[in-house]
Image 1 (cartoon, rainbow, N blue to C red):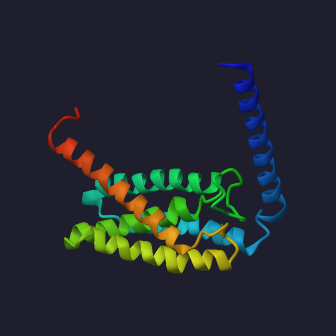
Image 2: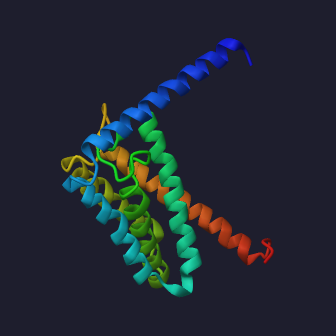
Length: 191
């Protein structure tokens, strides 16, 4: 690689390091355990985990768990894109280096898991109920998060972007889960 390319890369790494330190300092000054928002995020982290352990269909635990993990993983990737491009960010966080640990790591995956479980058990149309869930997240949860100061959107971004975000997560998770179900049924995977 050319020297100028390495120098530019090193400069970008230094800027990211400085930015990360600024976020960590902000967290220490404004988010730590002394605020209502911090404790709300603690609840939003642990309560969904307790609910899913209590409510998950044990007979379908691996399919539902894999689906939830896919929601979590792809939600995290898409969220990072939003954060890194400056489309949105999280002024208050549970963990300073993981800005959306509570909502996008627990509330969204657990909600999608429970909706997916209900859809499987009741043999309902996945796309209709996931669309309704995405609408609730986009037009109820996100505005509440903005009002509480847990989410900040920048530029021309509005809640329609949120619908695309939540639907993309659900559709990617469904496709990945279906691929693995098909692979499992064809015995391609060795036990």
